[in-house]
Length: 525
Image 1 (spheres, rainbow, N blue to C red):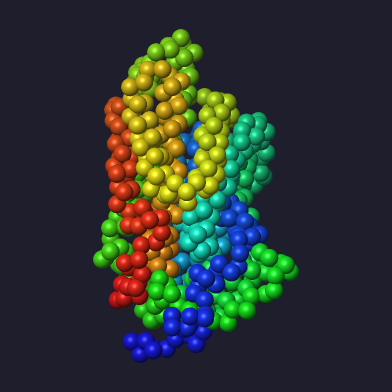
Image 2: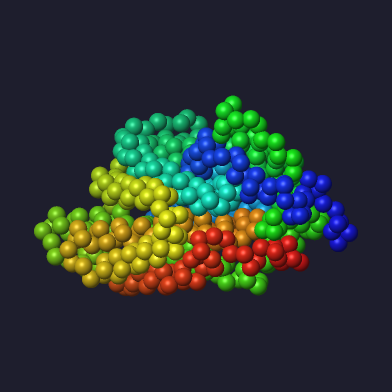
């Protein structure tokens, strides 16, 4: 390479001890107003991902007549956004690592909102499916990249805690899903839009409301610079220094003198991004291949399996949560107080096969659906806040093993418990393995250097979304015929995830492993 000896004059070697490393310079900004605002915006983005992907589960129950939906088509609409996430994750990871985190997050948030607004106006299944696919395609750009963007604005001391803080905001925002659904969907008004023959009902407005966090987050990030660690890894230390000084002003105001940082030392963990003019596909390969070579292949495999397992259970099983709850409630209303979940499912299947009734097109949802969904989201809110407080104290390994094990046991107990209310609570605990998704995301940020970090997070999240799609479709196929296996699969898989957690490099030390930090740039060759 002709330019190997060409360096940004601001980036000096470690022999200049008086000049701070990037980590040391970032620490001088203090932890203040800017950090809290960025955590809030990041949490709002995670909330946007939740509303955009899972909000449709409320819509399909009340939009079947407007869109002419069959049961199979409802399932497709529930999973098609995740398919968009899967297909686009690799692209967004590549662009985030080569063009910038913010340059991916902001445009994709605006595009996701536009796709959601378009989907609210669709009048048939195929058009709706196409719009929901595009919503998932674009929301994927921010769903994983935001972990790298947020983490790179914080030192290693606050990195995991900031991500879990955003997760706490996400949990709080998750309460909006059943709350907004109850307020908006459970209304009976309708407006006919002339010329286009669209009957605008509450479920259409609900879709737009689900897209608002994307819009608000994109607007908020218009005033925030690119990740300083990213621009520094590109050799642009001047811009990184300016961003660090701006952060310091935001955090301390006029209480302290402005920072006087002139240079930043290049630390060994900041792999330089390639500036060679290769084709896009060659660059994608250079960005992806290192994740599956050398010391990286072990950690990439582990985090992908963990994300797959947690999403398989938390999101795949969630698609059936409201329906099974309704069946359990019907059984209790019929005076059946000793029965397992699977016995209820089989009884409902048999009664459905023996009847030729036509399902009414209800425009509202039963209150119990909102009630249990609200409880689930409330537990997530408190749990994420608690994890954010204790993660640096008890360690990430303890949290992963505890959550994976508890959720696995709960999932297996659902098969055998014949007390309906207790079975519902075990089912709900199974769904709480979503805690692990964000914890693993925080771990992934620390497992890779800057030039591979966003791609690694995006690929792991892509595999996680694949778990959601596989889980929803596999469980849908098995539920009526092999209900016990439906709960045994995620329960067993989560036990495996708990064991695999022990093999994450550096997990017991609670910090980034160092064996690869000197080979990041070489790995791209």
